[in-house]
Length: 305
Image 1 (cartoon, helix red, strand yellow):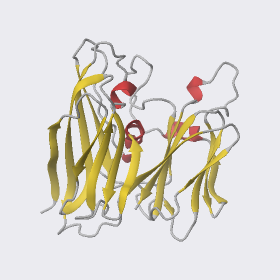
Image 2 (cartoon, helix red, strand yellow; image 1 turned 60 degrees about the vertical axis):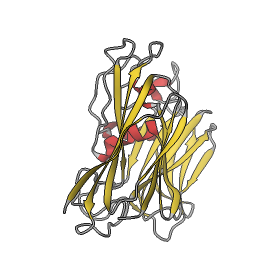
Image 3 (cartoon, one colour; image 1 turned 90 degrees about the vertical axis):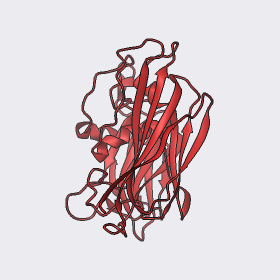
């Protein structure tokens, strides 16, 4: 048959209170991505920032027949990461801030490292998916919320046995100055495609005359059996690699990358030739993250499962 696009859920309402909603994702074809489109109306007393709108989706997870969940990532981390899959997620501008102004944004759960190229043999295999789960914040920036969930994929006669699916491994913790946090990803997949980080104290937030290494994440490295394989590197090495278009800034100075605390370390996620990312086979692999400030950090490993 070829390319498939189907509605999983149409205008489902999470309600006003914080809640968790699930949708079945057992498909008889190889799924390459899920699209979560959220709609709502601006709350009169809310500060209309891109961050505030996206925060309505607290966390996104999916499970398959082998694990529950197999993938976990916060909504704002997913929003920031999607540009590195070649997609800049949609969000309505914040120029109009009247009460009940319509607001919307999009998130994608990629199952393929190439969600825009269905010819690549990656994705969630037929009948392997179980549930897609979203944690919703209580009405804060928008209310009267609804969402659509759409799946894209390729029929099983064309792509019956994909080479793997993308998953996110989330590690949230409180950093301490000079201390090392180890995110153990041993046995979680076959290739490490990249690392999506978030840190509370990012470079723009530093005080006058501050040293450049007192951000929440001072440096990071990929360890194989406790030996450094990649790095050490600074998270801001990726400043020149940001793929997002520079959209107009919102009232808090944020663009479509929600804040400067987000960074993505790309290890060859979309290599044009050869194998993707770093080999994880037969190795004890950890992401070592050294703290430069005492506050919250998140390390999200992007893995081909």
